[in-house]
Length: 290
Image 1 (tube, rainbow, N blue to C red):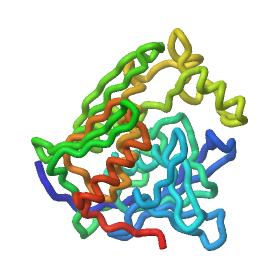
Image 2: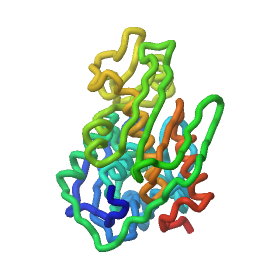
Image 3: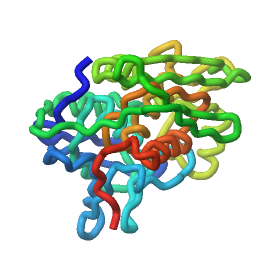
């Protein structure tokens, strides 16, 4: 396997519009080409001075059920599906300009962003992509959940997830995948956000999801998805892998190793990235928040 590659950006600007799940607002996100070594940078066009928020683990803040970033008082919310699309397709440098804090939810997957980025085209840049090679076992745990990284046998990136909703219609699901742009596009990008009916109704009672219906994402009742049809029999575990891709993108470089999770979520995924950075295994150059 080729162990080096050049950085990439997109060939032209492209946009995606949709409704924010949490805010209920109409939102537009525009992806623009960026110079080598820029990284992935969100730009809040709706705020004075158009503040920038680099997509790095240093800028991540803990908010339940999603991944959010903040820098200098400006933030972006629910970024995992956008970052998964960029990271999964190996687009390293991109300006992500938004007119609100939240990303558009669309169908709860990365597919709308992947289709837009594919339509924009790809440009290989004259700069090497930095890599972080996992040399030994690293593990993050919390209340019976865990995610770990260990060395790869083939100098690639392998993801594995074990999902356990044994007492629900989701059940137990597991999946292992060698991550490439092709496997991400085909096997992970279409998989959608899921939650249980009780969780959905609790969020709706709090005034969230006002413009989202059970047809806009996967809501599981006792007999399976409500008012919806699965795209894959194991769509839930595939979406967990999609979320892993988005969260691992916060390392700011290619991660070479095997990453295995048991009931892990955004918080533990980010904790593992922080551990990699702290051990000096990430050699990406970050644009840090002042």
